[in-house]
Amino acid sequence: MMLARAIHFDESDMNIFHSPARTGEWCISGGFEFSNWGEADLTGKARQAFANGWLGIETFGRVSVVAVTQIEHVEVDALCTSLAQHFVDMYGAPSVDAAQHVAREEIMQMSEICEDQAPNTLLLVSRELTEAGVREAFRIVEPRDADLDQFAIHGSLDDDV
View 1 (cartoon, rainbow, N blue to C red):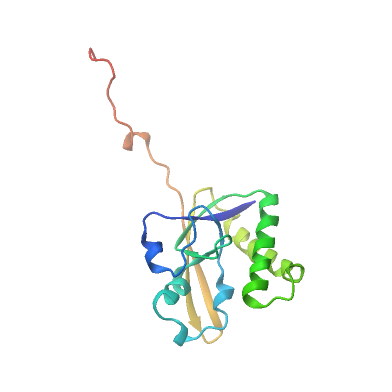
View 2 (spheres, one colour; view 1 turned 180 degrees about the vertical axis):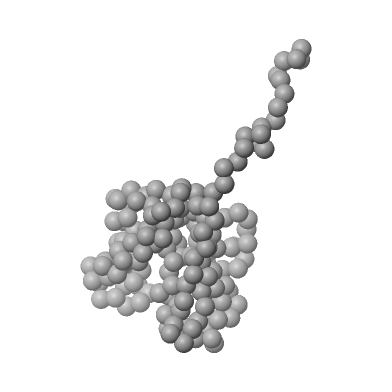
C-alpha cells in the first residue's frame, strides 16, 4: 500500500504554517479541517494551511509537499487510531471507536491518490472556497531519472592516470 510522507526542501514550512508537520511523518489531505470555513477565516498562516497544506497525522501540523512511499498495514492501523483520537479531541467525536471508520476513510482516500504513483513522486494540494464548499486539486510531480554523469565526478584516484 502507498501513502505519503512530509518532505521539506527548505525551512519555508516552518515560517508559513502555525504548526508545521515533522519531516517524514505520514500525511493526508486534511481538507475536513476547512469544511466550515468562509472567506473571513482565510487570513495569514491559516490561509496558507488552507491553500496548500497537507495534514501530518502525528503532529497534526501542515506541510507543503509530500512524497509517495510504501506503508505497512500495521502502520495504517496505528494511523487510523491516531486520527480517530484527533477527531475525538478536536471535533467532538463521541469515541475513538465511533471515529475509526471516518479516520480509515480519510487514510484510504490518501492511499487512492498515491496508489498509482511511483515511489518518491511528489504531491502538492491546492484548495479554494466555492459555493459548494472546499474544492481540492492535486498536482503530481513525477520523480525524474537522473543520468549518473550529472552527479559523478570522473577521474582517477591513481596519480599515474
